[in-house]
Structures are given as C-alpha cells and as structure tokens.
Amino acid sequence: MTDMDFQALEKEAREAIQQAHKADDLEALKVKYLGKKGSITALLKQVSQVPPPERPVFGQKVNQLKHLVQSLITEQQTKLAGDPDHDPGFDPTLDGIKPAVGSLHPITRTIREICVIFSRLGFDTVDGREIETEFYNFTALNIPLDHPSRDAFDTFYTPQGYLLRSQTSTVQVREMKRRKPPLRILAPGRVYRPDAVDASHSFMFHQIEGLMVDQKTNFADLKGVIHLFLKQLFGEKLKMRFRPHFFPFTEPSVEVDIKWGERWLEVLGAGQVNPMVFKYAGYPPRRYQGFAFGLGIERIVMLRYGIKDIRLLFENDQRFLEQFR
Image 1 (cartoon, helix red, strand yellow):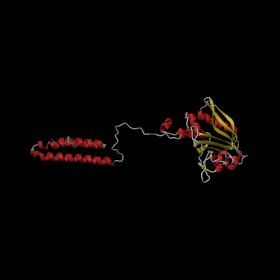
Image 2 (cartoon, one colour):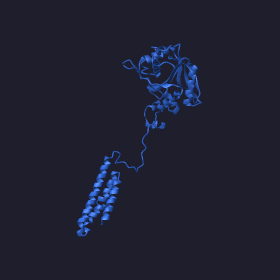
Image 3 (cartoon, helix red, strand yellow):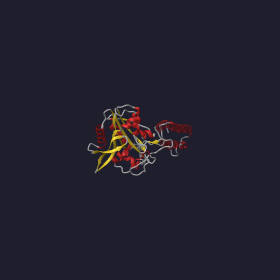
Image 4 (cartoon, helix red, strand yellow):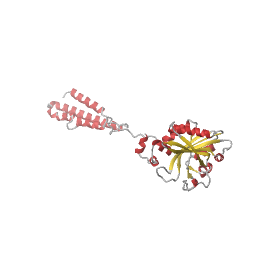
C-alpha cells in the first residue's frame, strides 16, 4: 500500500468523522474503520504479507492511522456531547411530530367577543374581587335583609363574615364609588351560588354585567344598546322581545328573550338603575340616571355551540375542547 493510499484513506476517514452529527453515525464509522472487518483492521492483518524490510514502516503507518482515526472519533464524540443544541436521540431525517397547541376555551372566547362589541360602544371592561361583603353584594344593590338570596342556602358565606359574590353587579357599585359620571363599564367574571349541579346548573359560573350612567340616559338607550349587542352576537335576523320583570336594583326592569327555533328563550335581565343604588353609591339620584343589564355567559355559550350539558364546560375533557379550535 503506497503513501498516497494511506493519505487517501486518512482523508476519507477525517471527512466522514467531521460530517457525523449523531452518535449512531460515529459508531458506524468506528465499525467501518476499526471494527473486526474494518478497513484499518484489514491493513493490520496484511502486515505479515509485507516484505520483511518494509514491515516496520508499514506497521508504523497503520498504527498511526489507527490512533488518528480513534482520536478523531473521540474528539467528535466529545464535541457532540458538549453541544447544548445536540440531541443524540434526535434524527432530523424523521418526520416531525406536531406539538399540541392550545386554544381559547369557548367561555373565554365568548367573553372576549362580548367585550369587543361593547368596547365599540365606549364601554370599559373592568374587574373586581370575588370575595365580597354583604354591603356590596346585597345592601348597595337595594336587596332587603329578608330577601331569599341573602340566606345561607343561596349564598356562600365565610366564617369571617364575607361571601363569594353571587353576581358581578358588585363591581358596578365599587366603580360608581370610585368614578363619577359619565360612566360606561362592563364587568365580566366568575360568580358563585350553592346550586345543585346538573345539566343546566353549576355552583360556579360566569356573568357579564353592564352599566351606563349619565344625566340623560333613558330606557330607549337601553333598548338600543341591547338590540345592537344581541344582533352582533347572534346575527342580524335575530328576533327579540322585552318582558316586564322585577329586580331590586333596577326600576323599571325587564327580561329580554330571543327567538330560538320555535321558542322564546330568556338571555338577560336589564332595567333603569334604581335611585336607591345611586344613593348607596354616593350619586345624587335626581341628577343622574342610567341603565344596567346582566347575562350568564354559559347560557350564551351553550346556545351558540349547541352544548346540552353545562358540566362539559368545566370537566376539562380534551376531546370536548378540541372541537373549539
């Protein structure tokens, strides 16, 4: 074997080792050159066939080549092990695996859509505390002491005398105490009531309540805002109706129904803000007037997406949630 043959073999091995970027590739090269049937091992077996005068030089060159290849493989292994971006188990030639990507929960998506609609009407989205006092959850909303909702069967109370808010109207009162009219706010959030859990009830659910206060805000403004909102949410062909109702914190009060298939469904309550609520908030009742409304988010979500059981929204079943990507 000539010097040129040794040089060619060294060049081939050097280039192959430098281009190896996986541990498996280096192991294959080690077998190719240094294994039992490797090309360098084969040269060692040929030493006995070389003429005696040339054996020492031939054997020396083979050993030098063997040690060089071994050192190159070791060096490349060390380099790969020290590379933070190198994963010995990663094969770039394999098909990729699409990572799991999350999406917005239908409740979150609906809340955001509603907030966007009202932001175009000048409403600010505000947040509030979920642990409240009786004053903000009941008294300031003109709910009398003997009202059934104040009973422990209808509200979660804490041993310290606080409660989990049963409506997001508490945010409206706090905002009125903090800010002066004109006022347009939207308050989404979780509320809590000790209801028995079934297909249409949950002890925790979501509400959005809105409030508009000015010197001349009237019932016609309320109807206009509700009409625009519901048609934006459900489509321009939506039919709706207003029915008289009673709420302690609004007077006059209405419930709003929409035509859903062949029947009417109640979707929200509304009305002109009761002067007593203004009094508790520190507003001169004769100077300001306004309207308020509230709706349950789960009811809207179930209608829009055809969901029959409210429990599906809270079970965190990936098979269910993947439908809303």
